[in-house]
Structures are given as structure tokens and as C-alpha cells.
Length: 379
Ligand SMILES: [Zn+2]
Image (tube, rainbow, N blue to C red):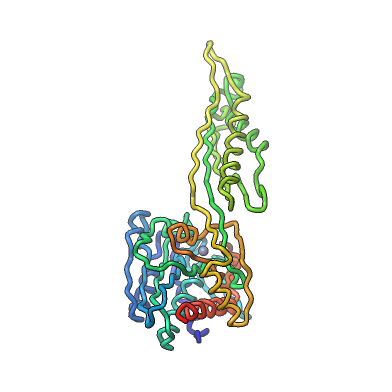
């Protein structure tokens, strides 16, 4: 079985190596070294160059000792801020940072689980098919490692991504996500001498947003305005404001409707304004940019990979729920590229905060589930 002690040590070692997005090299080289020692074939792809990071995705292939179907595993190597000089410690079965940084178990817990499972398979000569691993970069800044990965280098048709909270949940559904940027152009004028000659882009933005339905739209749709910037001085009618927001939905039609609603609010607010100077009429102008960040994933409850994980969990005497989440992950891309992936939790909680922690029993449980699933795949 898995070695709890070894995987705990390994996780702490990984966490002590800084690896913010685009700077994953040190942790990647350690993993490459470990995988080489296990006789795996390791390659760094070119994605690091595309996204201007210091290393690419680490692609690892482990030869099987049976002709079972190839199995895919993935976790991301990068971490969020504040994540430099992390000092992990364990107390009462929970791993935490010293409270000044994140812990970085997102997603080094997933990385460690994969390494431990491969070590265990080899050490105990457990029957398994070929295994393909993608240790990705830059997940935290828009799933970039997965976005640009060359999927043709993999033979796997299905697998497990380890990048969610508890192994009591199996994430099958993640939404499609859009980012929308609204650039509002008004007309500048001296605020004290001739305010009637200006069009305040701040006022237009306020009207637009106050008429906007944002937050939770329905059970599968959300939207948010996250950034507003603009204005120059108190004595100038502001002629430019940039507003950045997002919307997500598990239903692409609803997502389109929400983006359209946000756009309409800006256009309607702008309609109310115009200024005529020397016979010439000025109207505010709205520029809109919408970018699809990632497509949804929607793995059926009765998919082969889902049922295999479910069986593994019940063989081990645990329970697991199928889960829908409002966040995206690398699995969104893998699923859309043709590798059917479920996202299994690793025992990490309060991600992206200094309170991030790992419930160690759940961390071990997650590794047991992955190991058992790979055994079933070769049964
Ligand atoms: Zn993550």
C-alpha cells in the first residue's frame, strides 16, 4: 500500500520549493529527477516558451507491465500568491503554513499523490497499463499549461485530474467561463468651469452596473464585476473608465445571455447621454471585448472513468458524491481535447488564502483511491 510517511515528506519538500506561475522550473526539475529514477520517460514541452515561463509542462510516461488501457493523471505545479518561502508544518493531522503565506497544497498535494501512486505501483510490482502524466504549469493564471498542451502526444482516453478539495467528492461538471471588458469613453471637460460640456464615464458606469443583475444568476450561472479603473482628477469630468467582469455557466446559452445582459446595461446607460458643442453632437462610446477563458466540462455519471472511481471508492470502504463546481480546472481543457477526466479532491481546504490546509487523512485517502482505480483499470 501507499507509504503515508513518504508522501507526507514528499509533499513538504515540494511545498518548500517556490513555484509561482511561470516559475515552476525548480519543482519541475525535482519531479523530472524523481520520475527518471523510477525509469519513466520525461519530456518538457514547448508551452513554457509560448507563455513566457521558465519551464514547460512536464510530460511523463511510465511503461505498463500489462496491456491494460493507458491511464492519464494530471496536477498543476504552480501556486498563487503569497506563496514564497512557505514553511509547512503538521499539527493534529492537519498541514498548514505559518499563516503568512498560502500552503501551496493547491496543487502540490495532487502532484505528490501522483508520485506516490507511481512509486507504489513499481515497488510492489502491481499490474497496471501504461500511465501518462501531465504536471502542468500556469493553471492558476488561466489554465495556460493545459490550454496549449499538445494532446496528440497522449494515448490515454480517460484519467483523473487531482485538483479539488475533498476526496469525498468527485467533480464531474465545471462551467464555461467568459471574461468581459467594457471600455466606456465619455467626454472630458473642466468640472468647475463647464461641466455641461462633459460626459462622465463614471456616471455611465454607475448607472450600467446599478441596473445589472450580477452575482448568482441561477443554480448554474454566476457573474461578477471585479475591476473598475478610470478618472484622472477631481476637477475633470472623467472621459474614460475600464470595467472588467466575468460570467460563468454550465449552460453556454445562459452564459451568452448573461454577457449580453451586461453589454445591454452599458449600452442603455450610454444612450441617456449626449452633449452638443458648436453644433456638433458628442455621444459616449462603449467598447466591449469578450474572451472565452475555458469551455465547460460535463463528464456523465455513468462514464467509464466515473464508474471506475466509484467502484474503487466502494472497494476501499469509503463514500463519494458526484459534484458540480463553479470553478474551472485543467480538466476542462483535457475533456474538451478528448481525454475524459474527472477531478478528484486531495484533502486541501481554504485554497488561495493563508488559511489553506490539508487534512492528512483525506490526502492519503485520495492516493488510495487513485491507486485502486489504476488497479481496477488493469483488472
Ligand atoms: Zn489548483
